[in-house]
Length: 301
Length: 253
Image (tube, rainbow over all chains, first blue to last red; front, side):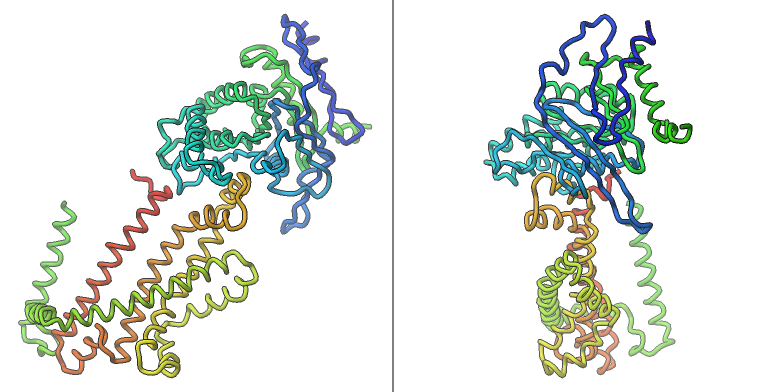
């Protein structure tokens, strides 16, 4: 019963290129009715097709990403999981438009008018990237000021989002007066206040201690539920990916390719203590460490 | 509190030692005047307005030269910091010229401008402008790429990116350059005034030497030190501290 539940419903490895269709066959918690996840077709938000990225370094060309194919739907919480240096951050920078791919296409299906294209894909970095010369409130106001919004309305919006991340009492603090977790919450407010189409998070909780990380994960899930944002969350932590993601996309490194995708059941919050969670984590970790099934198959075949 | 007490004791001890040495008769007065003689000279000079005039003249030259240096140095540093080919050309020239002590510009300056204010201004500017340029340059160049990425991500680009992210991020380094530039300007001015007699504090120093009036020499040296301390402690150190604190470099512990 247990084996039959968890393992066969994990979909086969994908991402070896175009020929394989990444089918997201979901698997469900026992006892829970198979809800219509994916049936009421959510709108496509982001489409990444055949994206390749190469960097020039002292040692020559380094291929960071190879043939990435990926789609994300509206309102989805997608976790990109992979070992350090597998190109996860590069992929996020490409999506954010901070860098351009060598090859391939990244398309955002935006619901915005042409002239409001500014700041529709916002990224939250591991080190928060708040500006130390501004107060917390001024940091949140930064993007709004660029959009030439009225001072009063800007401030109201900024305070609203500071309250959402529970930082309203720290609006006039300087950045260095905040703890690591508070910095990330401020960064989240700074992004959310601009109402982005896509929220990109680059290992935002990796530098935090265990308790803070768990707390922020819960808060992020709550904020995601309330704001209905589409989130792409990059992490190297398997448990974090399973806790937060609707879907986990496993990348393998050197060069980064999509190794496998796991579609998770919709039940939230995810309970870490369930056998389902543990089995899925073990499965992903096995895939994580496996130096590539393709390679093994080639050698033995 | 104990720190202040120790400091006071040290200086009292120093003056006492000086007093005893001066009154030991080992050296003639034109070599080592007694502290009270220096004090008399200082108060007489200040009361007669002679020293005050020299102070005003020197400070005016300094301020003029310094402001000119800022007006040239900060934009030049920004340009060389942002533009690669300018950095490789003008930037390297600035770096090379910085090894030249600014007083070496005096002969050139005298031939170009003649024996007048402009000649000394030129030396002051040459002393300060290079270090201000260099500090601004490195400040702009060393802005954490993360800030630029975050700013661009939120829609800042071009002049907005420069004014609202690069400039404030570079400010601690620029302030450092302002402080260094000031002290270089001060040194260049004193050197210039010593060599090229035309009022000012350096001129008073030289007059003291020529009249064998060691009390005046030491009194004027004392004024120079006090003025230097005044600007450094009361202006630049405070500015630097405020910026460093706000930027979070010095965590108040």
